Structure formats: structure tokens, C-alpha cells
Image (cartoon, rainbow, N blue to C red; front, side):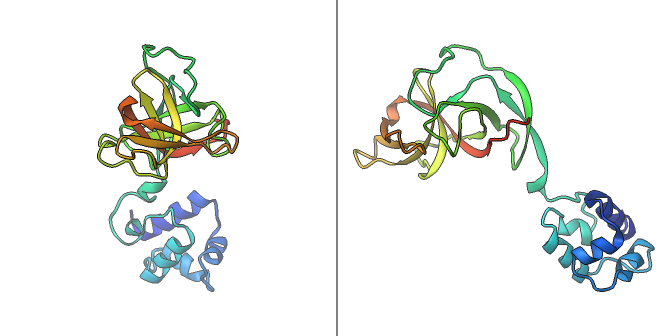
Length: 214
């Protein structure tokens, strides 16, 4: 794709006219944009810098080289499997049984998702307002959680009795080598220590989707 085609692609992507685009990126003379469109000049480093400063979703390497991706990787959507099993914002018994099979009930688009990520619905109110009931969380498996937990982050903790607990995890003051502290976002729900020996798996929450318009 030459520079003329790249400018055309940008105008189409943002639904802008050349004059509007020039104004958006701080060019006083729209003729610069016209010249690139007509092949009279190329995309200079100055223009490329102006574009990515205004639109951080645009891949600068695409503007100035042969990189084929117009958008940065972080802005690209990946369809992530939505799993039938919920994550409960509390320590109650899940409505689903421990041996219920896991299967995909839909696909949800997320940015920053990786190949093996999944997403699950949230139930319970202990993590409200951060992860309210009915929201969807994008989660990623933490395989070495016994070595490093990453305190201060929100996780789905899969317990050995089948429960799937959604909590912020912090260091536990009581026997921290064997326990973690499960912190709630709901001020009316007390924090609780949890023995690591009860944990069967850990998934880190990467993103929270609270808009139910999916």
C-alpha cells in the first residue's frame, strides 16, 4: 500500500474529509494532505508523528514502512469464548454443580486478549461496583500462582470443591505463606482469608465488560 492509499484508508476509517483530517492532526495547510492523496508527496515523519499523536490506535510502522497492519495490536479485537460457568463475587456455593461440563455459549470481542483467554459471567454482589453481577470478565490462566500471585489484582479462584470465587487478592497478615486475603469491593462484605491449599486454579481478570449490550 502506497502513501496515497494509506491516507485514503485513514480518511475512510475515521469518516473524515481531507480538511477535517488536516485540522485533527494540526496541519495548517490541507494541501499537504491533498498532495499525499495525489501521489505528489509522501507521508513525512512529521505527518506520521502528528497522526499517531492524535490517533494512538494507528500503527506508526504502517505509516512509514511496509507493515501491513494499520491498527496497533492493542486495539485489535479478538473473539473470546464465553464459558457457561460463572464466577461468583463471594464464597457462596455456585449454582452450577462442581462436575458440570464447561462449554462455550458465545463469543465476545475483547481488545488485549490472547489466544487461550476465556471470559465468564459474574454473579453475586460482593465485587460491586467494580465487577457487578451480570458483567463479563476476560480472564487469563496464571500457571505459576504458587510462586507469584500478584497482590492487588482481581482473580477468579477455582477452588477444589468446585467453587469459582471472584476476588481481589492481597497479602494475608495471618500466615501469609499459606493464606491469601480475599478482598471485596462491596463495603458491606468483609474481607476473608483463604488457605492456598483450597485453590485448584487461578485466572487473572484482564478486562471487565459491564455493558450488557453484547
